[in-house]
Image 1 (cartoon, rainbow, N blue to C red):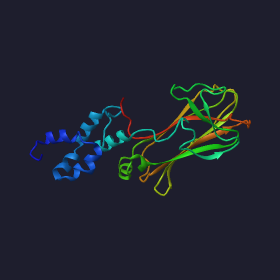
Image 2 (cartoon, helix red, strand yellow):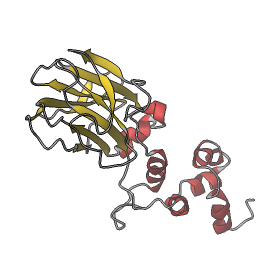
Image 3 (cartoon, rainbow, N blue to C red):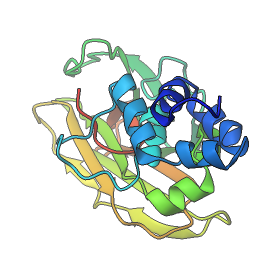
Image 4 (cartoon, rainbow, N blue to C red):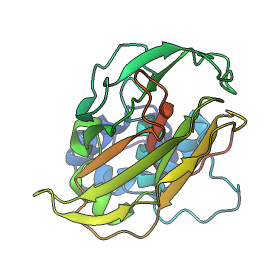
Length: 251
């Protein structure tokens, strides 16, 4: 194969799965290593997969990192819409009558903006908080990629109140080191929704940019409570939580 023109070799290598390129093909010889390291090869792989930056003229510092980040991108929050009960969630607090799962729209509630979302988690009359710990290596984000690429970390969550009851919503997202030291945190002020609100679903979103090197875990915590202390499940409702890493890509 060494006798093949470089363009022909690239045309073959671009068809090879990305991890095989890095873990196997790159080790064959110095020629192949040089070809696998070419930005043009990874740009071709991105084009083949339809990975395009948004906006389209955005500079790409490293096409190989861009390819891997696009291929890995998905919601890292498991069971975000209560379809699997409380699987993957750890209840940090379960005050009052505790957490419950209800069907949309629920009593004195509204349908969710996206029709495929059918359930939500609901809180009670004392603090109800639940959390997930995401270990990035478990999802394919190796240490060097996190430290060198520093991909944007985008967090979103949806919350709503009942029409007939005041409630409070809380969210905390922490970027943690290998030893679970907090490197950066998103901790907005608790949101209080007054009684007789419109009961509409509201979205909160935050993007971590230029965070310190060493992020290995992400802790997502949310919840709240009913502010009128009624027995049952009159507190804030939450669903469709999301945590994604990587660049903005064009549709």
